Length: 113
Image (tube, rainbow, N blue to C red):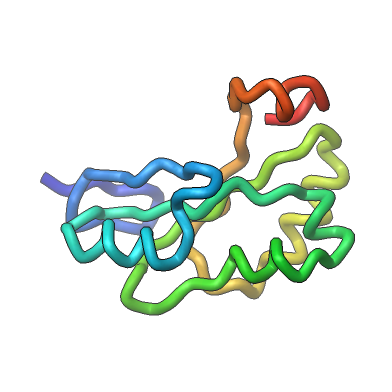
């Protein structure tokens, strides 16, 4: 069974959810090696991207054998999120997911997620 998202057809409908502190590059590569159809990176803060935080940009690193890859953006201001998304246009991941339901208290208290 295959899953199609827009023009992208996944070989396997199993999707690795984005998990802060877990879904880094090595973990995604392991998941892919076990047949995961789509791997997702950690949540990326729009503010951290706009401030040019080096650690945040390092989290966006991908490798061709991971593909397809999704990254997840979170924030509270639609205009800032749009600016951050534009910064990511040239990054080599397949999808940019917008986090709209993170229940973690430190995210919720800022009106994010």
